[in-house]
Image (cartoon, rainbow over all chains, first blue to last red; front, top):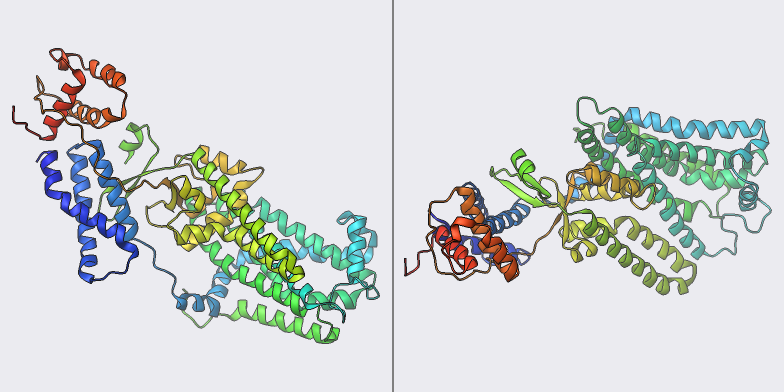
Length: 326
Length: 236
């Protein structure tokens, strides 16, 4: 069969397929036409193979290649995530995925909480230690924010408007979630970025907490951070977990190539990042609307903070235990 | 598959489909991707400016809203467009690009999230430094995010109509031709419309013995191509 004849016999089918591909946005009016799509697509695949092996002209092959590419895109389109999958994820799938990576969770928690605790402790012994991390200006700002006698202190005083809360909500979302995403992405260069963000943030937060504790602003500071601490700090740890997974895939891919290891681990890591982003959002809400509220005494806030810690740890330790791993 | 890699001097990414045939995907290069990024960045900048002028006058409430919205634009602009608009952000669309999985299927939420969260890593240390190195070192111009997500940016060609035909009288070649020679003639026929007359003439004259007896080498070669494609004119 020569090329002209080939085109003449097959042209009609190609045009029909092209029509179906162009019309895909419109809902099928009669089902029959769309039922024909897979068959038409496979026939065209066959034509492309024939055209190539018979060395037909470049343009014919290109045209068929393009038609098949579009058909392939349509036929193998990913299905949308059903709502059920999302609820299953929240109900325990997230916790399962985190537990499966428990080694990285522990490593990330150590990299974050150890510098935090060490800094916190060191400043109680040597108060000047705070200046190794924060400069004088920052220290003064932090002090005025949490000074129980200060007018500018954080937390809603009776005349602070709720629109300030909304502004801070926006700030926490943008800033904290951004830090989380960067901590994750920093895992790509062999985990170095993740390492840096975890240790840096641990040290920094530890310095602030240590200094304020040491100068005695405990009730303003600890009662403010108590509420959102469980969500926010552990969201940072989980961002670090996902980042370390990437870094480890690059450093020690095992029997896979580095690229293959990176691809496989990214898929798992991003599944942790979905939940982590949600945690940052919840934390921002608590931090903006609950933590600064003047309506409740510090004791109440400590209790609520404790409840959050129990809930968060409980979720990750027990969530999805009774389910099939998915 | 390797055959294609070796013999073709083009950035083609072959994908084997379940139907058992190889799709040839035209991988997009550095410059068009960079330009697409510039366009997207300008569009995002414009979005910030518009949102800013609308929301800042609303005071702290507006500022909070602005921060939330800019957060979403910063991180999810790419993901939303890539997943919802068939792999095309406005910039990619303007440059005729699209992003797909490297097995040729349309991009999913997961892959788009990975490649766009890791954009920060590609951006390091300065203006896509790592991304650039990664793209240059990779056959398919993948930045780090593309490697991790298993994605590929390709040229999204416009649906192509059947090529314009030259009209020439079918002409039997003076002697039998090898397969490659036949192909060269067919390709010349299809491309000759895109060449200037002089260049076509110059190329045609290279065929030597084929056209020694011909007045118009270009027309003669076109005629032979038509003959090879199976046309038989009234005269032959």
